[in-house]
Image (cartoon, rainbow, N blue to C red; front, side, top):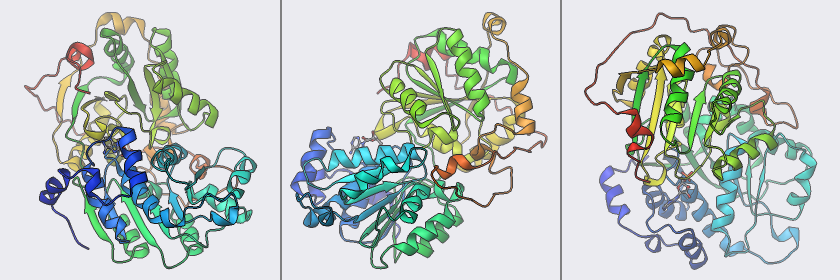
Length: 476
Ligand code: AMP
């Protein structure tokens, strides 16, 4: 594997899209989107992918990785583009696998944007909706299929698609797919593809498992890295508030109401907390909604659309539901609860500071979460600024924190599986037909009761709340 250096990234950065060897219809689409300069991952990955090489690309969320694989795919398929209406002229030639339906939807939307000046057709299939509604679209013939693994296999079983002509495979957020137990499904899918094909693997983090996956599935891959693995984005200012679990709701309301908070995603560990918190915020006059795995696909899309349209300002989300969300210009994320899996922190805060914009990531850390924070700091190789939260007595009085959060943690009956995955033994993934497998996973209890490691690092670098929430607006 060839490891590219940061110096070469700087060099590449100066090149415009027109220097990447993209065909005119694709360049036109890029210009239409308003992009002027390729992001580092695009500048590095596009020329290599155009050469037909296998890639193992380390790019965190928000780095423009979708265009980094979508543009070369489209270019490679251009010679096969046909305006014929015959389905036979549109076999599936590129397959993009994503861990979640949200990411699948977003990726396919981007592909459509980049393909708009070509006759190439794309489609997205994911679980949680009636499979029959997807079949007619598949039958019309499409060159690029974006899919979640479980639903793809459902279609294979029902013989509603054929993967025999796939030339390019993309594994997007490969680390997530492994975390979610998709390995058996991936193996099955890979066995159905022609051996002669190009493979592009994208992963935000590079664990040993990911390296093993790359060894198994990629052929002489070129390693393309634009940020240190497991690194957080330097554009994101990270701030930690230390406070009691019972004060979190009051402090959140205080933060949100203090200044006109712009759009914020608030992360919780459990579905129960997400629902309860969004209701509590609504009562306090904050336009909030929750998305989590118990919500129907329709409800989640509605909440997301309302958030994107600015109708709601606070989206309370679990890690599962928020994965892959691309909301441009999101200035802030708040970790209401610290994830027990440190990689989730990287993913969460990757929701802000996208495509070079600046962002703020605030984390609420109670005493029993300090250990998780220490692990996060180890992973991201940064010591985070910590400050004791000043919770106003008025905010404290108006909010009542039910003891339920703690109960949920102990019993684990509503913990989103991903949050708990590092605390519990990884389970074997079992796929049920006609549903996105991720949401079929039983909840795994978090059983980590280790005494916390209290590291109260005092910092001179105070980031006043007013500044964080509007007094000084982040550059966007
Ligand atoms: P991604 O990492 O693919 O999810 O992309 C993150 C965001 O960056 C999306 O909103 C893209 O539309 C945007 N984006 C991708 N490439 C560029 C670019 N070259 N210039 C500006 N924005 C971009």
